[in-house]
Image (cartoon, rainbow, N blue to C red; front, side, top):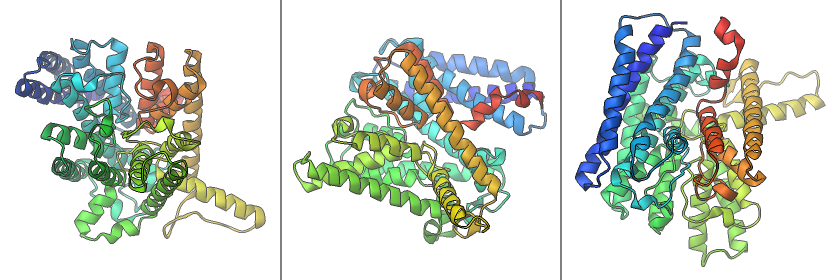
Length: 483
């Protein structure tokens, strides 16, 4: 294991990450909110630690293999999440404990959107901006991880998208080198953020709110600058813009790249995952609209459609924005929306959950098993589009699903052990493992009232969800450290 090379890389990352403390400090200067000092202190602290790790190891150039790759990916999120909490620890307003600071920082960086804060609109603008910026940077990291790194490590069926072998979408090959891939993804990500900002501004938000909400929309994060989230604006147009950009951000960024580079929108229509994703979204909106209409929850059909579409898309893409208290909706809708977050967005998007392609492959595998019962001697292959998939990919997806379920059960039981009721424990685990944010019961509005132990457990759940379970689990196997 090339430990010194890994420390060098992490030192570079921390020093680079320190730059993210500068924009909130500038926002503090512009708005004169008195909240800039913690960010300056955090900047100095991060630069010093980063350079201290980098400088003694600057001449290390060891070849990094898959094992080091796993360790770097996990440490990337753990280390940056920890340093992201530093300015929150230094803050006077709000005065957060260590557990609260770490929870809020990891929630931002993993684009979960669960918060321990209340009275958000009264916080300094610099703090509000920092939370939104964390989500935006986390979203970019997730895309590079999902499109460029995890396929190479072969995590949970993501070898489908491996650059050197044609995946289910021929055009998803993108560019062979990670640096080039990251650069192209960065262009698309920034362009979408600018477009979303302008759309929000044109719809009536001021520039600060437009930028902040564009950050968390494209990252599918869910943080807002108001306690009431998107409900603060009470605008069907803003809700619609949010839905459109959430759907775009929940699509595989490889497809966006393929569509832009080939200037051909039919790339999307050839992708089976994209079609299944839209079908799921449509079905959820129809179910929510039908139930809300039949129970006369809202004044008229237009408002019902607005609320049904917004909440269905927001929850199922794992954004977690709110325009109303969905946990008070009738019948099975709150639980349905929590379960929809298990599917989440497409692979290679900023969405959380298990990803549409994995759930679709599990469905296809189920159909194959039923067919085998009828015709035991027949040979059935699983096809994604026109491409037959090797069994090892399907096995990897089954392994991922099993690990996901196991981690979910363990964290949920641990939360119940801290005294949390079963509905709150179930929804909090789902909300953090799926990087969704809002839950039901005690955690419907915020996570400030739960115990510190529960916050630490849910922080671990966020990291598990963001790192696709296996990436973190593999570090706990003796084989990993022996190899």
